[in-house]
Length: 262
Image (cartoon, rainbow, N blue to C red; front, side, top):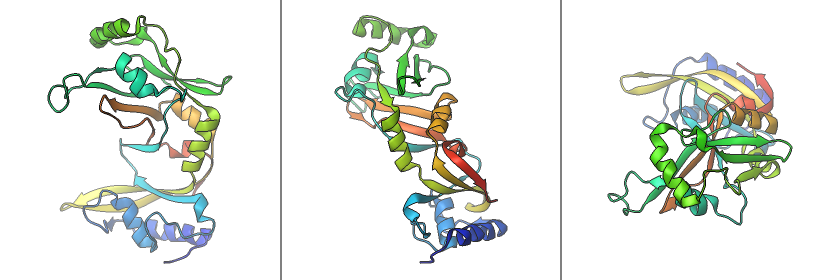
């Protein structure tokens, strides 16, 4: 496997960008952009061959896409309460669309994708308390959409009131910063334009950024601007885990130093 110094890797990425349209090296592979780039670099999957490689990643993504990238899974505190299965599902959940069909008739669902910009149509929102150093989940019944009034009335019966969550689930800055910092390494962030001809994909690697040093303040700002989303995906029979997910073009927001290579 080829070993590069960092300047050599930068030069090689510039060469690849000048090649223009390149056919998918592994036709039919959903990860074709990254796989094709790895093949062009002569490296093994997810194995960046530079000094201090443990601190660096190679990320390759489509230049134009609406899909979200999962950054990591982490359940909220207080840890003494398994908040999603013990509180959200039984008290704030709703009947699963497959209840009585694929699942039992009592199957409940709690699926919410929320952020800090504005509440969801069921009144849930992310709130950042910088003085307490917490990222909190908030519930405001006055923000619930008319179409969910029947559900809201059922919540009142189950909870006994429509007040703020008590206790409020949260993530401490220290815990979340450590989790994010270990996942979001320095990286070479490569974006490719994509086209299809006769059923085959072609890529043009048109942008390369070098992203260095994770910024927790950038992470908080991305949450407030709805660039990072908190995703709950649970049903009675299974909690798929609470995820922090990123809009595809917003990765540079999460780093202190952004260097444009191409």
